Image (cartoon, rainbow, N blue to C red; front, side):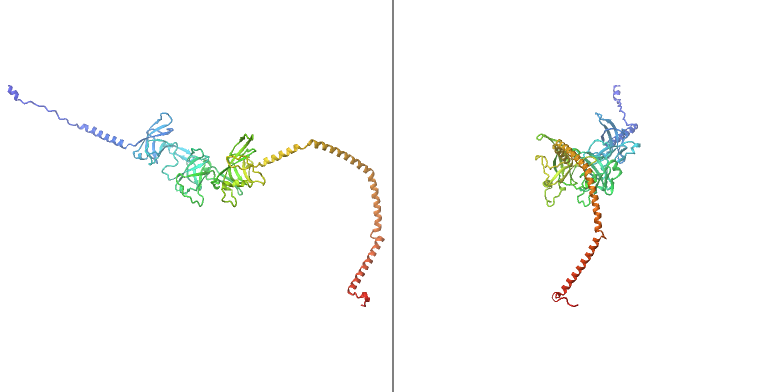
Length: 531
C-alpha cells in the first residue's frame, strides 16, 4: 500500500500564461499619439515675449493678435499690471519662425484709429479691434522683453530712404509727422523732434524716401515753411507757401543750389535748419567777432538779436544788453555786446587784411556807433555804425573790456536834448530883470518922444501948412507966366527957331568951304580958280 502510494506521480499545476487583451490597444495608441502631439506642440511652439505699454486700451487676452503686414505672427496670452501699477505687461506668444526677428532693434506698438498731423490711420480697427503691430529687424542681439511704442512709427525698417538730422534754434510749429517738401512735392516727414541734451538747439530728425534722398548733397539747405511768407515790393504783395497743410501744421523744405559740387549726403548727416527761405539766401560767413559799445542814454527798445547795420546793410546782431554800476565813477553804464561778420566789410587795397582788424582800422577813420529807431510802429532800436563827421572824438571808456570796444556818439534825440539844455542854461544866465527894467525906461523915453512929436505935428499943422499953401499958389502963377514966354507960338520961341536955322546954314557953308580947300589948297595963294 505504501509502495503503491509512492509510485503515484505528483501532479504539477503550471500558472496560466498572461496575454495582453485587445482592449488595451486603443488607449496605448491614443497615448502615443498624444505624446507625439505634445512633443510636436512643444517643439513647434513659438517664444513667449513680454511687451510693456502704458495702457491696455483695446487689448484682450487670447483675442488680440500680433500682426505684420496684416498677417498674424502672434497672439496675446495674458495681460497684467506691473507690481508698481505704472504700466501694463502683455504676454504674447510668437510664431516659431518669427524667433529670428526678436532682436533688440525690433519695435512693437498698438494699432488704433488715430488722427495726427501725418494723417488718419488705423481706421480698420474701428470694426476689427486694435492689434499689436511689429517692425521686425533681424540685426541685433536676441531679446524677450520690449517697451512698446505709444504711437506707430512713421517710417519702418522696410521703407527705403535716409534719415537726416536738422539743428534748429527753436522748435516752432515743427512736430512728428510734419511733411518734408522738395519743390512742393512731399518726399518725407519729421520722425522725431526733441531738445538737444546741451540745450543749445533742437534736434529734428527727418526721413526722406528713396529716390528723393539722392537729391540731397552736403551743400543742400533746409528751411522752415510753416505758415506763409509775405513780402511787399514794387510789384505789390507776394505770398508764398508750400501747401495748405504746411500753413496749418507746418512743414520743412529743402533744395540744392545750382552748381553744387558737394558729395551726396550720407545717412545721419547734420544740416542747419533756416527759419525761412530768405535766410538761407543770405551768404554765410564763417568769421564772427564780438565788440562792446557803451551807451549813456536810454536803450529802451534795444533787445538781443536786434540788427547791427552799416549804412543800411546788416552786418551783425546784438548779443547782450546789460546795466552795470561803476563804483569808481558812481554812474550806471549800459554795455551792449554785438557780434559782427567782418567779412561783409571790404577795404579797397587791403584785401589781405585780417577781417577781424577791419572794423578797428575804420575806427581811426571815424567809425562810431549810434542807436537809431528801427521801426516807428514798434519803437525798436538798432545799432547803426557809420563814418561820422571829421573831428568826432573817439572816446573809449574801458581799456580792460572783455571785447574790443567801439566808440559811440549820442543819438539824434540826445543831441537835440543836449543842445536844448545848453540853450536853456545860457538863457538862465541872461539878466532878464535888468533887461526888463532898461526896456521899461526905453519905452517911457520913447513915449515922451512920441508925445513931443505929436505936439510938433499939431503946431506945424496950425502954422506951417497954411504958409506952404500960399507959396504953392504963388508958384503956380509963376509957372503960368513962364508958359506964355516959352510956349510954342510965343515970340521968343519963333525968334529962336529962326536963329537956329541961320546957324545951320552957316555951318553948312563952312563945311562946303572946308571941303573945297581940301581938294584945292592952292586957292589960298592964287585965289579961287574959275570953274
